[in-house]
Amino acid sequence: MRLCNALPGSFACMVLAACLDLSPGKFVPPNPRKDAGGGTSPDAGQTDGGGPDPATVERLEQCRMCLTGGACSQQSTGCNADERCAIFFTCLTERDCWKSKIVDFNNVAPCLTECAAVARFTSQLDPSTLLVMPVFACAQDVAGCASSCAPTLE
Image 1: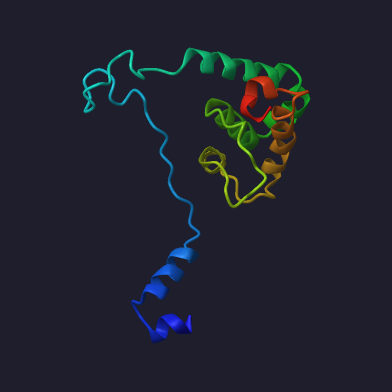
Image 2: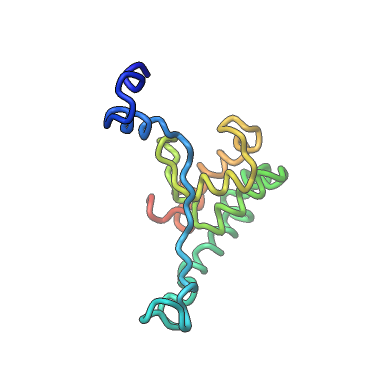
């Protein structure tokens, strides 16, 4: 960083410092109930975003059933036998995160990062992480549970 030593406070130093910040950002999912019934938004009422979409709730329940007792049950049994993998599994299902792409680890969906933190995963090679990979593959496979767990990837 000799450039920054020679030109402290310069635009180049600020850009370099911004590029080197690799800390994950804190994602806070929107809360549709926050403004329901007299909150700060004048147009948010009980029927305006006051609850989860019933079709999504039904699809997520179908996803959970497919993963645990359907096409992906063998893969999820191994994951759910491990405490941290089971926590990750539950988090992914509740947050509708099975449809997230994991091809580019530099651009992962916020729900993956959050669920990994909840499950206390330490790296991509964490033994518990390795147990969820077959479940993830099955959840996104058309022959598996993709129709309910990852419909946008079909």
